[in-house]
Length: 455
Image (cartoon, rainbow, N blue to C red; front, side, top):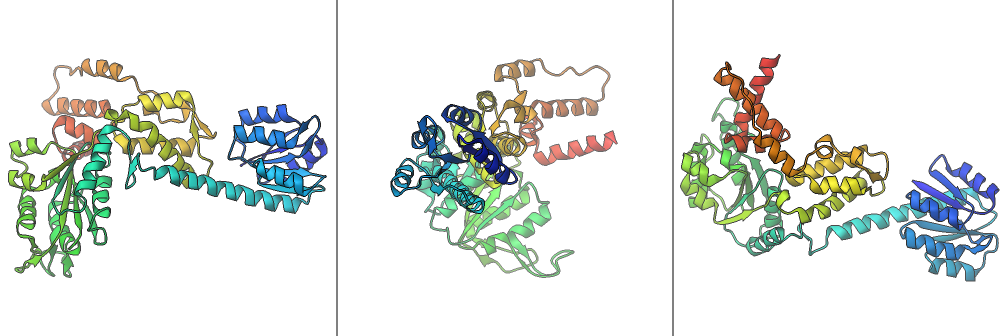
């Protein structure tokens, strides 16, 4: 933390600086002009200010300091202590009052308390900003028209039992919306269970959802309740539902229609009351047309559709999200809330965010962690953001296409095109898979093959 000592007696500045420089970064000034100039150049957390400066009033300087840095804590020092001057200093915004000769232990103790108070005050400000009702809903940030429509829809459907299908690109916050529906609604006191349908092999996914009896398959050493049974009365969130195998889709349909589940290896069905919220980054209508997703299940799940727009289509929310993540990660890392230089802001506001809100969050966590100054500059941003071309330039580059030389096998040409598309999407696998019209699992397998081939 940065401390500024303002006293026209150089000896006092030197002794206080010597006493405090093990714990703080200490600056000194002998008068108003030098003090105010330092405040322009450096973020100051705490100030020790002499009440009686030559040629000026310490209280008048205190008022000027508070105009420039309202949250800086100021402790007044004077050899002429009186009740009147103490009251006047406190009214002008001073945190406390010390009389000379100073007791250095008392200075350290009071300064520590003052800075702890300041940190608490800043945390309260962060929390207050995070709950601004007009810009947030259940922890989801957005003042854009598109997000306000989402908030209104969630508010309407949170207390009913109809199933919900949330669509949107990866990183747009689909799980956040699902949690908002559950925890703002009537089922909030019961379980909210999440499973990613793309991340688990088919047999294990079936077991996770429906449970199994002892001995139902190799490794089934004991009976296990499935997710639906454990979530009775609550909500089950099926993420990436478009990746679910067809055989399991039929079993999900039975849960919806009959409200029962049958564990693997059992002949006995069990009644369950669950609300299903599913999410996808794929166009399920296209999957239905291709025969990879059941049409009857699609209509059962899609009773209430909610679409989350990508961040590039709600750019007015970027400043709010930037402010939120800067405050969040600064607090998490125990540093003063960092700010952005104008050039860094421009780069963040201009970037297209193929990874959406999740990518913006990662970018700002990176910047807060690695920047050495309190003002984040463009050099503190990840290379993808720092050197990203404008959208028109990127489009022009994409239109130039990929040159595939003659003589390549079909597999070699496929490899070149997949890697080219991945690079064009800044390494974002979900967007790449979507553009190639293959599953993310299929893309992962291709990339593993290429890695093995390079060894």
